[in-house]
Length: 103
Image 1 (cartoon, rainbow, N blue to C red):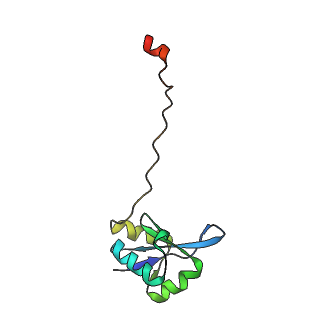
Image 2: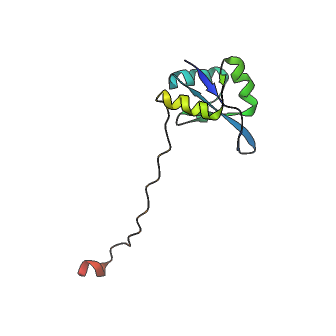
Image 3: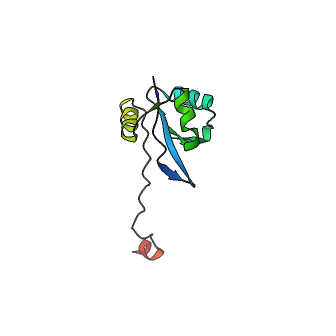
């Protein structure tokens, strides 16, 4: 049972971010995030987005620093990876008109 964190390399909203996951359970991940003071709103499907300023504290608390590829591989191997759902494709068919119904 390990909480993993990648280096803060992901830019968003004027900051750099890390991803934090568990290779055991979401419960372990949520408990770790609570101890770290990371709010639940930072949880996205299968990971927490953690700002660079929190990275050192996460490692000091016991998170295992790993590369991004290893983080995803271990999350997937644990069966905890949740991919984004693809958006349904819009139909290219035109709507049925009154004229079509009369035919």
